[in-house]
Image (cartoon, rainbow over all chains, first blue to last red; front, top):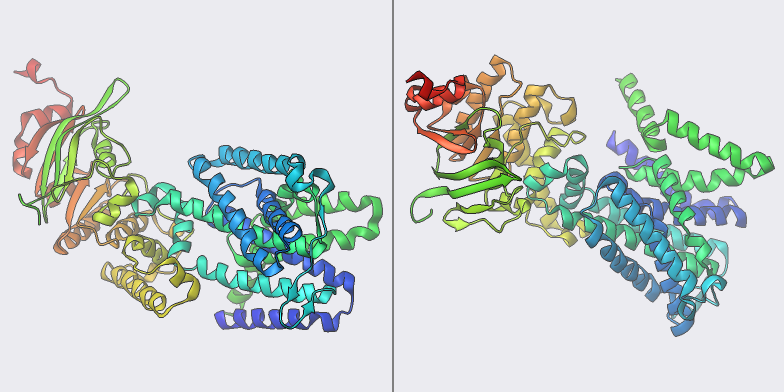
Amino acid sequence: MLKGTKILWLLFVIGLFFDPYMVRSEYHQHLLIVSGIYILLALGLNLIIGYTGQVSLGHAAFYGLGAYTAAILSVRFGSPFWLNLLAAPVVAGIFGILLGLPTIRLAGHYLGIASLTFGIIIEQIFLNWISLTRGPMGITGISPPRIPFLNFQFTRKSHYYYLILVITLVVFFLFRRLVSYRTGRAFAAIRENEISAKAMGIHTTYYKVLAFTIAAMIAGVAGCFFAHYLLFVSPDSFAFLESINILALTIIGGTGNILGSLVGGLFLTILPEYLRALNEAREVIYGAMLLLIIMFMPKGLSGFIFGLKRRYMSRKR
Amino acid sequence: MSQNGFLLEIVNLSKNFGGLTAVSDFNLSVRRDEIVSIIGPNGAGKTTLFNLISRFYKQDSGDILFVSNSINNFSPHQICNIGIARTFQTTRLFKHLSVTENLKVGMHTRTGYRFWDELLNTPKLIKTERNIEKKALNLLDEFDLLSFSDEMAGNLPYGVQRLVEILRSLNSSPQILMLDEPAAGMNPQEALHLMEVVEKIRKKGITVLLVEHNMDVVMEISDRIVVLNYGKKIAEGSVEEIQRNPEVIAAYLGEDIEDNS
């Protein structure tokens, strides 16, 4: 059973590597690139919500911090993408700790409000610290990634496609390790019963801050890629509504498993695009579809898939 | 071993909630390998005492010593590491984790590898994880619960849930295990089985501190009984001594001693 799943994953990843050869459409590649960014964002938020059972309504702030860190470093100091790919998660992670430490004692709604406020504060900083962020005008002139020594510059969509594919695969790999052993069990214990977790010797504050920090770092990576892909950042991209969007695709994809973030990121990036043909009705139908998914698949798309798999398995038996 | 031979010493411990005295000037010394039961009417302060020992509450005055060292400044999560484990009055299992996973969480403080071992899949991690798995399954086997190993804890029958919670705490290799009303809600057969389990735990050289309302269980397995009423210790002694103690009988039957005399 496990082997079958592994083979499916392997085929999926191989398929992804050959995708640009099969579908020679820049538009299609752009969609997958954007999906990649959202998969990373959903994965981070999934760690907070699905694995550790906490709330965060300001995830776009970390995404923005990563993007602005990369943009400012690139434009002001000519720092290359690869260096920014390290710096952006560090900065986002530090803010993750700064948000986590004072607010972690809060639970449920209160933590939600605190994280929401944090998101708004960061957005206001992007808007109003004009000497650093150029405010609503945004930052232009970010240099695209290049591979040193080979003198290879990222120009085409397919280049970026492979870049985000490799980044996402690495993050997936590390994430899976993170949630599978001692740390992962501590996260799950906190989600299931915090008092029991404490009695079992789990330093709950440490692990909750750790979850926030790692989620922030993953969002920082996504932000850095975003900045070097669009070559432009502005506060609009990291507004409150973006936090809600990330939250929606995390929940709809399904929380507490990796598949959910993958499906959520892919589905909710691609679905609205294919609804474009419907013109004005698009937003309504999109909203209705989300509502239906939440109503009939309360565990998200991944929960639904696992349910189908379980039914298939039991029938085979 | 401590200098005076006591594993756990509680000295002049007091705790008030507002104007309400939950525990008042309480003293208790527990030797290694003992089964000590704490009994008393509802609201006598038994669970408060457990919460004080496991540091979920901080006392207003008094000291708690473990192997002669004060644990007054410890946090709840540090208690497990030094060898004090507990269960809860209402089951607090990790409901959406398998029984084995629940037991593995019990080993949290006994897991030697570091964060980067997890990320890098080092041989140390693989070896340790294999041992954790083996240890959890062995413990389940020892207590005849192996058939439940892959079940989701929340789906188990109530009596089994209570046992799994005890095993989860036991899996942290404690020196002292505090059980808060383990027989609550159990049927007579399950309670009988529970007694065997506690006996088995003691045979492993683990001291048991028990809060329990089921007198059959208490009288059967205790080496020593402490009776609490209104936060005060009103009696302490062997099973026979407690059964004969008029003050205990009064507290349980609600009689007023002076009126009767």
